[in-house]
Amino acid sequence: RWRPDGSDADLISNRETADYQITQTDGTTINQRWQFPGRSDCLSCHNSTAGQALGVRTHQLNGSFFYPDSRIVANQLETWNELQMLDRRLLRWEIGSSLRSTPLHDGTVPLEHRVRSYLDSNCAHCHRPGALGPGFDARLTVPLHSQKLLNEALRSDLEGRFDLDPSHENDGQLIPGDPGLSAVYFRLAHPQPSPAAMPPLAKNLVDREALHALAIWIRGLQGTSATSIGVQLGGPSGQVDGPFPLTITFDRSVTNFLEDAITVKNGAIINLAGQGYFYTAQVFPIASPVTIEIPPGVMVREGLPNAASNQLLIPFSPQRDQDLRLEFDHDPATGTFRLSWLSKPNRVYHLRSAVNLRDPPPTWPVFGHYTRILAQPPRNTLEFVLPPEESRYFVIEAETITPK
Image (tube, rainbow, N blue to C red; front, side):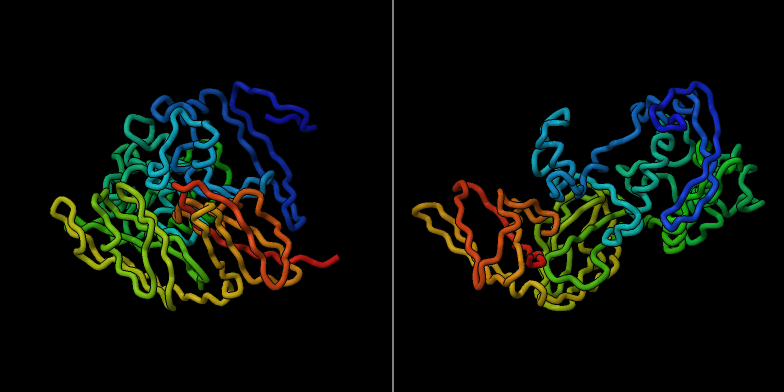
């Protein structure tokens, strides 16, 4: 617990509470009760089954992160791997095929995966086999169909604590289409001192954003089918001006999922990667609109065909990049590469590069020292040498500057 003057923090042994006045960003104040867990409270979540430490998991690191010192956006798992911070070095294909957790606000990923990522981060340390949380398995590594979450009855000794359905014939852990009969929603909606509060300690506020997302997901759920494999697509919600990411999630683990299972009009799929129930790819738009879907029955797993996916319809306008088209030349005798583009006054340019197209170009790191390149109208030219075996992708990014 931090001391009032903020000079240091003290370890406390027993549970305590304190009230604080919080000044919000708009200048208004609210009173907030804070609960300091005791040591026994900590061990209820920091349990041996969950590995004692809560986070970080590999899938929580597998995403873009802004590094303020270098001002570079890079995949955090790739960065840690390069810095040899992991217990073994991961191969590039392992990172590209790995599961990734996504935040609730990332609208490019199916809502189901965002909600399940939230439940994984906040609930899976207890709600997993062998741990204290009964009922379902909240781990993101487990496909939805295997989580024992949908239409699962409540444990008999818990029924009396939740006023969902007096007969307890229609309620359960999570009832597709009905948040009011779903114990997961009910418990998330209650803070302490309610006995229904989940988590059962250190919860004095309800996470309204998560509750809203959970409700929308439950209302749209049809449940998992015993006769087909469910599949969802996620991508940009608005207009794009270049390559964009695609996320594909199944409600069961699948194998041999290939690009030809995805129907794309006015675009092309490249760099499909993943395993189990989670896959990602890049889409290169050609014309507008780009439509993407997976038709029913294009793949079969253990006798089950896939159901039809949702359809994505993405408007495409390349106009923003027309004046930044890179021209390329290579001298095989010297190994020199030459990149050039039409430049404009009052601009600086950043050359970004990647060795794969799994992440969208805005997250690519700057190539070498080629950042804040001053415009030299009418054309800028760069020359450099790459190793013969190295293959790279490049984009040029413009930044307007104010002349002094």
